[in-house]
Image (tube, rainbow, N blue to C red; front, side, top):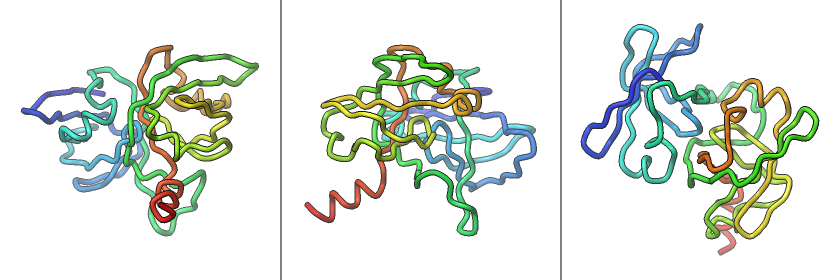
Length: 182
């Protein structure tokens, strides 16, 4: 994160563009799992803006200069699908309740508001800070995921500490199935 500024009730962020990325104003980029529109470009950085609803539901309001974020360009129709469908429509900010290291992997226990329990299933999909993960176990207001060494090396999930907040997006198929069957 290069710079953060508040504009009334919204915030604007300047984010360093990864080497080799070709982006233009209007492109969609996932920033820690938040679907973000590139507002403008300047040098090796791009600007995004978040409205009050995004600030309320996500960790965007916690971003500061120097914050490391996961970045991913939008999937194009002819791209290979790898992982599960992640839209960047963050449902909530979960909180890290526990971190356990087991060999080269790490188990995260993430707390969430109980009203989302209906969308979370053992061995189902979930996204944390935009990273597609498989749920290992589920409780009334928590779930666990296991992070392999590659994910730890290549995402900001490696920097998490107990009490930190993460952006959580439930599986879109679970959300639609629940709505259909309701």
